[in-house]
Image (cartoon, rainbow, N blue to C red; front, side):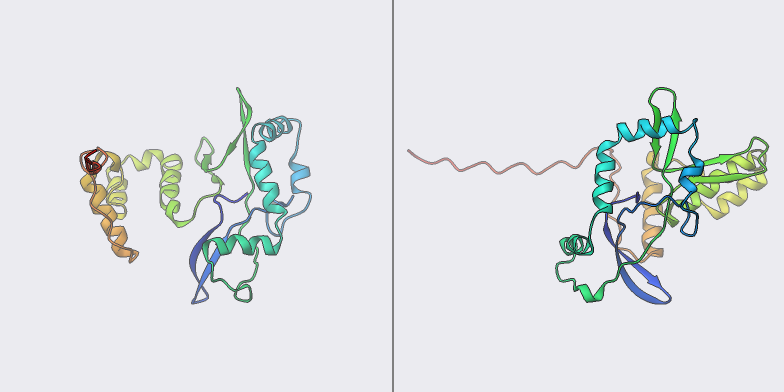
Length: 224
């Protein structure tokens, strides 16, 4: 399944600016685009068949949604696009296979098995190998994931003054909890908007309270 519901996105492919709409869920027993159709079958064992079964029962509404996506025709997908882009012309769009991901199901003592929809870093105890499980939204999570790998694999070195200085040089806000520092949030947000050429962000609410709504107008009194 995709990590998000279908949406419009701008991309630059081979120097050409294009608009994408998707992703739509599909189903395959392959774990990779060029993998084997026996990937799912050969990975199923007596140890993981029960967690997969439990997830199938617990997440039945999700399975219904995904099944509906798989059964969509080209006309159905184009109709979904027109909800966002009413002036879309079918001849301007073509269907392409996007990325492919394997849904992670983790064994759980209470529920038997649970879906893991984010990413999880796994590493050996000696730090000789590390890997990333799951799927991420992309570049927005690449940096924190890499920092997480460094903290797991090079825990002792990360704690040294030399590494700390270098990390803060690369990521000035490293180690700062932005949710407790509204001034730093405003600074980082403005910098990000400038680099990505986005609309300047609104002022950060430093009080922590929701903005007070304007009082509702009272109806005028009428004479009987």
